[in-house]
Image 1 (cartoon, rainbow, N blue to C red):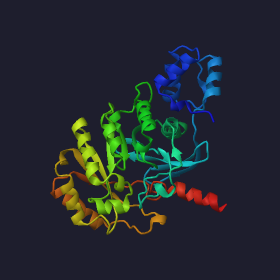
Image 2 (cartoon, rainbow, N blue to C red):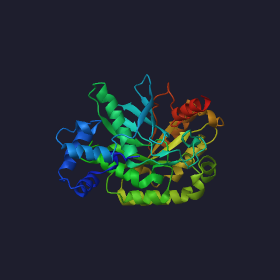
Image 3 (cartoon, rainbow, N blue to C red):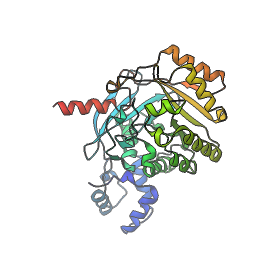
Image 4 (tube, one colour):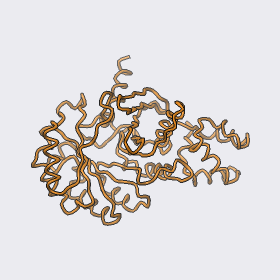
Length: 354
């Protein structure tokens, strides 16, 4: 299959044009057509020569994604199920926030991290997404508004969909570079966030990445025993090693880290867990932020239940008392397949039962 032109950074595209005996300024023209005018066909690039259009068409596709399902929730959340060229399926989610339109993208087909509460990991990792397949998710969402004649722009990106982003590190970094490019969508680095389950070497590498993209870490437990029971990655990178990487990141960047903490009834949501978490982060509390996440139950993981509102609030109050900044996350799309991976899982079951 032909690669997507979205795979290429502006520098990559410039080099490709030079290798094909074209002028380098054509790169900026093509970039403008892709990301400013947001065309869907090379034939629409009216200021390019016919021969260059033919070369582009023979060498690349624009989008490698096919829309399969689009679900719209009453709160404005939109969930997309896309099919890739090899027929694997991925999910992308648009969330309407007070500060703008935020899109959550997927980085892998399946996931090998093995979190026992997560719908994303029901399918083991099949492969990494290419840079172009990640970029295309943003572009498909933007086209969704363009096609409706709505003057709305994607303003924020969270890399928290299916897969472990730091297990696809190079493609994710290229994705950020493309999104941030001032000649492209020009989405500010601080308007983008990447979430990792705790790949220690990549956290340290990310600390040295020049763009100030936000970092979130899926912690979900206050001690090794609980974390290992719900997150297999903790066997490879226990909390002590994770906190060492966190210290390196904070010392290198002086930027805040968000810790994600999914609330599982009777598992990690007791007040003693909250106190333990506060103690774990007490020397970092000026630069950390806890995101308490109500659990979206998954049929295949029916051993877990959502914590009660009272337990979540009691947990929050312990953190607040200890001076640890935290928030109870606002839910989006609760009247559709809310948990990441659920829509794909449902579609796969339909296909299997045909």
